[in-house]
Every structure is written in C-alpha cells, then in structure tokens.
Image 1 (cartoon, one colour):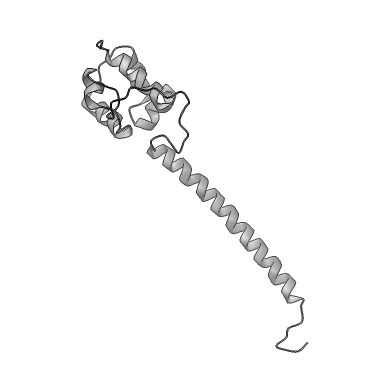
Image 2: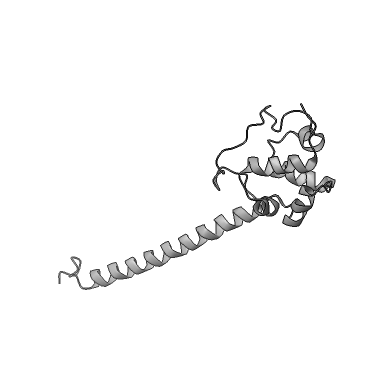
Length: 135
C-alpha cells in the first residue's frame, strides 16, 4: 500500500461523498476555501479533522490523518459511482435547514388549501335547508 498525501486523501474522500468540493466544504463545516488549500498541500488543523469525521463518521481516522489502512471503518475503499441523494448522504445543518424550510412552505400551502376548502364547504352548507329547523 502506497502512502498518500492529505491532499490525495481529501480528494478521494470528496469523491466518495458524491458531493462537489464546494458542497463538501459547506456541508462539512470545513469551508470551501480550506478544501482548496488542503488540495494544494496545506495540512489541516485538528478542528478540521474533527469536522470531517463528524460529517462522515464512517471514515477511518487513521486513514484520514496518516493514510494508514482503508478509507472506511468497514475496511473498504470503494468509491461511489453515483452521487448520493440528499437523503442518503450525511445531513449537515444547512441541508436540514433547507429541508425544514421546504416542509414549512408545503405545510403553509396545505393550510391555505384547508382554509379555502373549509370556507367553500361552509358556503355550500349555508344554502342547504337544516333538518333541525325543518326548513
């Protein structure tokens, strides 16, 4: 097994995630600029390593730091062929907020529809004779 640089490992990890460099930097909390710097050879600080391992807990810490062993804790180094969907990849706070906002908008639309249909139903029933009054 040949020794890899951190630059090579971060490139491999981003490819494995199925995300773009920018998206990986944002979603992991590492930052887009830092990702570019690491790909140029800058060594990461401890907080960067923690952010990556928090974002992708399946990554083997020894591989990430020193290049020893397999990329993933399960012993595999398999690269994904297709990008993961939003619901398969690790959820970042940005992704969770985006999903929450989409759900909030859908809920508001459902409430509006409910109010409109309720009003239509009330309008329709106000024109019907009531059995209780016998009219």
